[in-house]
Length: 423
Image 1 (cartoon, one colour):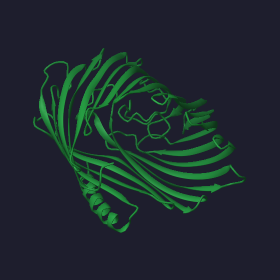
Image 2: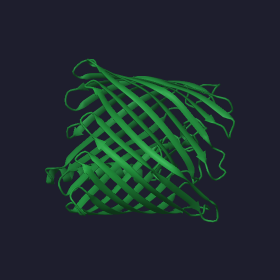
Image 3: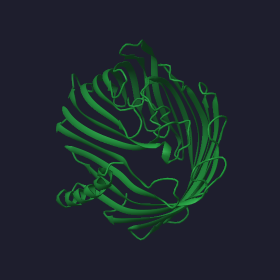
Image 4: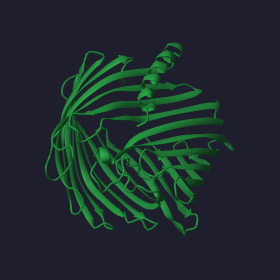
């Protein structure tokens, strides 16, 4: 990672501390952390398992502001991974997000800029080790012009520039997006939305540029117990010198509070996308390819949450299919289920646990992968500024042609809030 990754957190902390003294509406939280993690299989191999300790000192910074003219949300985390064995080199990780929106003219003109940094695998078929990890940084900047043709309606013209930069793979791109959006207010809680989007995509490296466009009509409704959003339309993707890919698309979400203690949520989508469009499922831990390529992604997710006293249970299932349109042999289907549990053990102690079973079928590669992930974490709040967290997790992967592995991980973490109040 570049040296600026190590400098940025300190600079942000100093800047945030100064701002917090001059702007009463600004909230700044700065934390120092240390995590000691033991893994039973650092190489994630089926044979010759090797255990080691991984030390991870780091820092967190959160900055928030919400006024009539300015909205800001900054949340970054930096860690230094120090390996006690000689199989991996020590590395740095800076991840998080920053979003700033300035309402230059109230209800008329907005300017916005944001950045997200996620740690991602380079190849989804391979196991997630240091040799298969990278940082993907996405930066956006743009403006939105808004008009109100009549009461309850809004017409929006939006320009967005997006820069996607991956630290290892050849998936960098720059995009110029133009969007025309009309919001028709049917009532106080029901809205009809028509959207047209055009994107000019410049891929870096030897990849030809592309054009992407989408037209949709959508419906939104929000009541006391129900939130509903449905979008249907068509999208097109065309690479220079290659054929056009076009298909119907849809996306939808439903959240229903069946009772004061139980909630159902359902999401689904189908669209043409690629690694930097920002339109897909956003599964940053599963890039699936190390080249720029378009694919049709279909997703579905169902979640049920139940609160019983001090306990919260979550049960869900998910399904994702990615079909590549440019002869990239990485078409894959992922299906699975998950379970979550949360309980406040005392006023200052909480426990979280989870389990997930999934199957990844890479049909073009002839590889079928069964995965199990489970773990728990206990969080103790000690006073106003200190947290002690500890837990463990288990991961297993049974693959037909790629690497299988089994791994046990235990960790203990100290988190010290030395500026501000932790939210």
